[in-house]
Length: 268
Image (cartoon, rainbow, N blue to C red; front, side, top):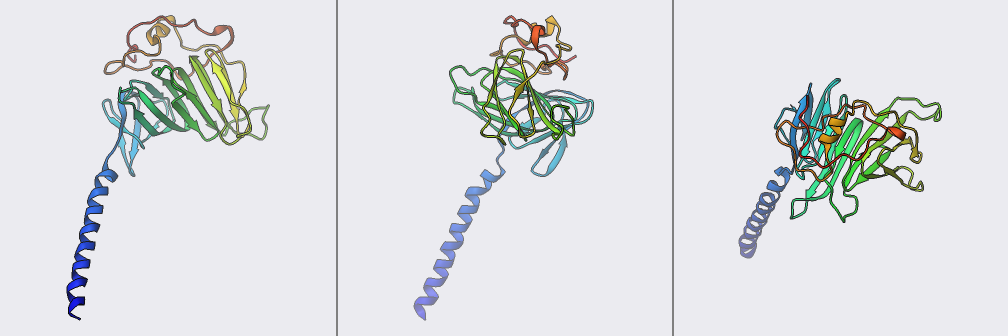
């Protein structure tokens, strides 16, 4: 009996101390947020949802990994990521930043976005000599690159006479560089390599296929010059990609490679 009275409280105290240390050790990790980027341009209204709380997006707002960004009708928001890549979420779109990690040099290690609906325009810093490490995921497509400029557009409830039983489509239009596109719901289908001036459509569970993209809309020579080469220096406060949401193109309308120039033009 004497030993039990001495040992039991001691064990209880040690267990309590160990539990407290475990809680203290994990609490900061659970609360810590990884900054993915900053809002550098906004038109209209957009919201950021983080850990169940929703806040309005505004110029200078920090965006964390795990955040969901939603734009209202007629609105857009541009986010400059920590590697100086830029994403522009157009109107009525819904996107989550799933991953954004950097190498010791500050270059991108891996970025993954989930586009649930709408269109995201990606102007991606080049990481030479690496496999594709920037990915935009939709429910039926993955578009990956290591440095390029392209649109990913996911739509539901739309119809195409070629696919009468399908109402979900992902469209990828490449303005510069090369993007690999595949359908994760159809692993037997080969990926498509989409080059500058090309566009692919991914229907429901089908394989990506090339089609004639519409002519360039809203892309002036000055805007192409402002885009510059991938590998640009990050634009200053208020800078944005500065192109309209309807800039898919293809065929003979493909623009020539833009000359190397400084940062992007500010949003008008």
